[in-house]
Length: 458
Image (tube, rainbow, N blue to C red; front, side, top):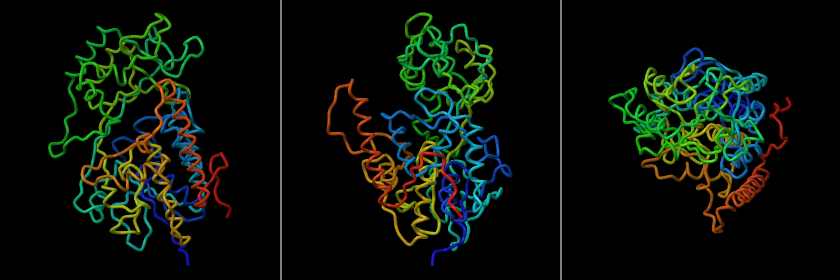
């Protein structure tokens, strides 16, 4: 007889919130444990569920990109995170950027409205008994106490990487004399654009680079070797790879025509809205581990930011993840303790949407358990299937986090010209979504009402 005992979800971030929704909206009782505000983390500021900390964007929404295709797949499963992102979006070109507060409110209110989800504000410092069905979604900021307890499952593995977050600027304090609004490759006469661009000439760029490379950084702890995930490297780490590296990275000027000059600048710093009203602006790609005083001194060298007010300065925090290929099965259950599942960044995926998807997958497998069946993973040829396959089959030695990307799909045997590449990727995206939709229907997990998921009828 199926169990009626609640599933205990530890962690109220994106993965935990998604898992709690998928379980609770199907009538399965859930106890969602979130330690904030009883105990705070180095990166969070509020007590809301699914608070975003590194960026306010869920990645690209464009149909020719891997994240855009991935979101369409997740919508077939009624993803709460993607739906909340759509409901709280702010303009950001091709990215699904959100108003942080609205986004967290949508998710918190959705879960609070489910009668079978109990939210407990407490720190979990010990693993529940093996008789309790548990899902650990504590993310990259897992508390030290629980991390120690997890060694019961993970053994001697001590995997981690460092994550850096970017400063936020008050848009009202940006000098607009040389700044301009615009999206890459768009005609400035057609739209104000979603990004505020701060152009630099060569002399300004070289001076900024010199200051950045010599600025004082926050030192790492003696006993830990820094291992930054490629997608969140500090701006100074990228700059250290070569004097042109930033001009081919976050300060790339290509496609950003300055309406005052009609030309591309030598380098460009982009600011992206953090909230719907646009007063808070994220410095795109400017994750940093510089000391606070160094940050203000160096970043105010950027044209337009000489008098800027920084609403939040950048910082670095230690992220924790486990050796998923060695420790978990395809349903994200611990091989050594099947009553415990893992989800989110702690299993070695990187990105907000990817993390929430792992909570969704872990929850669907728990639902299947209670129905006395097993789920086949999404097929290779889909972004979701490709990511799960990587987590299951990556080489355990040297295992590192992964985003969704076209490298997770089978190699494309069709060679196309550069001008046709976008259309080809759109076509491949359509194929992936069609394949995923068919799989979801066959597995009985499809939810395609196109709106924010609603609680299951009591």
